[in-house]
Structures are given as C-alpha cells and as structure tokens.
Amino acid sequence: MTAGEDLLTLAEAAQMLGVHYMTAYRYVRTGRLPAAKRNGTWVVETHDLEAFRVGSGTSTSTATKRSGAAGSAATGYATRLEDRLIHGDEGGAWAVVEESLGSSMSPEDVYTSVVAPAMASIGERWARHELDIEDEHMASTIVQRLAGRLGPRFARRGRHRGTVVLGAPAGDAHGIPVMLMADLLRGRGFDVVDLGADTPPAAFARAATGADRLVAVGICATRADNDTAIGEAVAAISNATGVPVVLGGQGVDAATEAAVVERLGGSAPGLHRTSGTDEAIACFEGAMATPR
Image 1 (cartoon, rainbow, N blue to C red):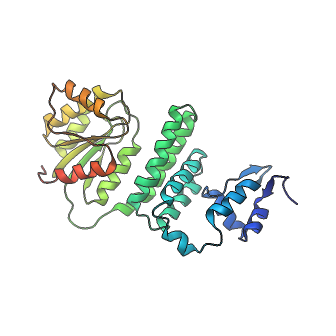
Image 2 (spheres, one colour):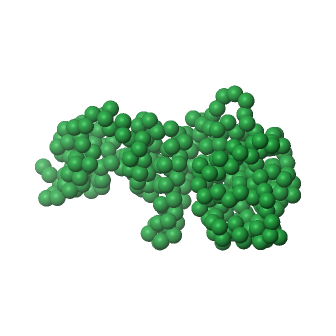
Image 3 (cartoon, one colour):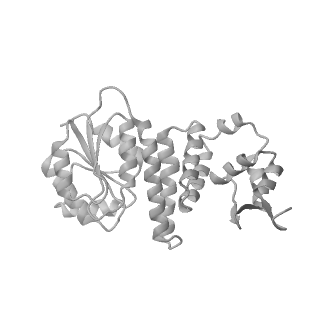
C-alpha cells in the first residue's frame, strides 16, 4: 500500500531501487536520498526517487563510483554534510564523512573540500536570515565533534618541525576555523598550540613566548569589522617575539589588512595576509626557516 499518489514509503522505495531497506535508509541518513517522516514512517517523493536513480546510477559498480569520487564528488559531499548539519543529524553527518574518506579523499581533503565549504555555506545562509542562530550553533557543535573524531588521523610520527600558535582574535567567537587549521598543520608535522576563539592579545603573547621552537603565530578571523582587535593581537605578538604573523580567515581581505597596518603605525613587516588554506600552510612552512 503506497503512502500517497506522489509518495512512497521507504520500504517501497528500497524495493524499486532493488536494495535492502537498510541500504535505502543509509541513503537517507547520508543525505543522498531526500526523505521525510510522516506519522513515524519515512516517505520519499517519487520525483526525488527518480532523480536519485538517474543521478546515482544504482547499476554502477561500487569500484566505479569510488574511482571518480575524489574529484567531482567533493561538492556533493559538502552539500550532503550541510544538510545533515542543519538537521542536527550527527550520525548522518559522520556517515557522510566516512563515505568521503572511503572514496580515497584524505582527512585534509575532507576538511578543506567538505567540512569547510559546508560550514561556510551555513554561515552565509545564516547571514541572509535563511537559518536561525540555533541552526548555526547546532551545526558548529556537530562539526566540533566530527573534528574530534578526525583529529587523531592527522597525527604524524617523527621529529616535529617547530611550534605554531593559533587563535581567533578577541571578539571573534568562531573557534572552528582555528581547530581545523590546527589539525591541518599537525598533519604537516608542526606542534600546535590552539588557543581557540576570542583570544585576548596578552594570551597570544604569553603562548608565543612560552612555545618551544616557535615558528609563527596564526590569527584566524571571521569578522570583517574587527580590525582593532586584530591589530592589537598582531602588535602584542610582534612585541613579544618578532616571529611572522599569518593572518587569514573569511573576515580578512585587503581592506582589513590595510586597516590593521594603519593601526600599527603604517608598517607591519612580519604580517602575512593569506587568502586560502593552501596559502596559509605555505606561509607557515616558509616561516620555519628561522624557528625561535
């Protein structure tokens, strides 16, 4: 018995796909097959089922699917992860991460091509008032848990390349970019002191002076209107250590850099503004020539 003219129960959908019910349920949990609960039963719209059949190619072998996943599938994983995050589905979100890892993506690729784009999109949707603040907070909490499970995969054996101190400036409540960059740098062989969000200038300075073989300090900024706090952090770090300061994040552009330099008296030779993850990592690796 069908759920309605344009609706199918998940059991019926599984039968039409030629898969076990639990396989169809996994498609739902990982965001591949749109579904909703009606009176306690999962239902699927017929046009969504047809789109899934055409788009996924259920007759395609698993090996064939995996062979192309590392390239074009990254955007699909990010979209599916975003959907699970805004629905508060931690299990489904982790299933998307596991699937992306199983498609030959590295943990670094998952961070940069799946997790970061998903969170950036959620932030943009919140700014456009398409999502409520509780949706953004719920998604952030789940991502922190996902990162906690992924973090150990970035551990690297052998002698480390020096220490990097990371944090978000005072007034910036977003610690996830700091957390992700910390793991990425650990994967490159650095020790990392992660100060998290809303870090006072004096805390940056203390952590930097206490670090063993300090290479550089990174400031992850998400607010474009926070140049005063960024400038104070840069000044405190420079006065305490003289090591390079790598400045990056969604809230940083040329105007932010100019405002910070102006607040520092028109000169900041140790400041390096970056426009992406790869550029930021390259700055840290370039700075390791003169660890302190």
